[in-house]
Amino acid sequence: MTTDLADRYGAPPRWRRPVTVGVAVVLAVAGLTWLAWTAWFHSTPVVTSEVVTYEVASDHEMRARVDVELGADDVEASCRVRAYAEDHTTVGELAFTPVDGTNEVVIRTERRATTVEKLGCTAEGQPRPR
Image (cartoon, rainbow, N blue to C red; front, side):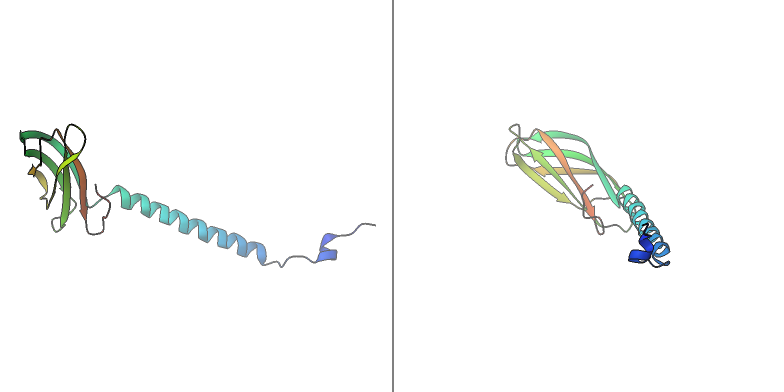
């Protein structure tokens, strides 16, 4: 005795497969669109910065040159640099509003510092420091 499963249990509706494929295509397109937007957004920051040089001016002062690239003229950014002592403790920190190009900054320290680290710059719409 041979039994056809469709006769026994009933066949699925004819519309189910095209609808399933359509939903999968819509979800794939939405996911790829989000991925492309995320990659573009994170690869084109509004503001970027880099510490070019630094020097120990005295036991209580460090000077640093920070190059900042602003994406547009009307961008209001905020940058932070931190000075460390020989034992790797933080001895000074400075937050400043940069201009596009080279920024010469002076960091006051509580004791002699040996290095300067760029914590990064942020702007509206860019909460992650760069």
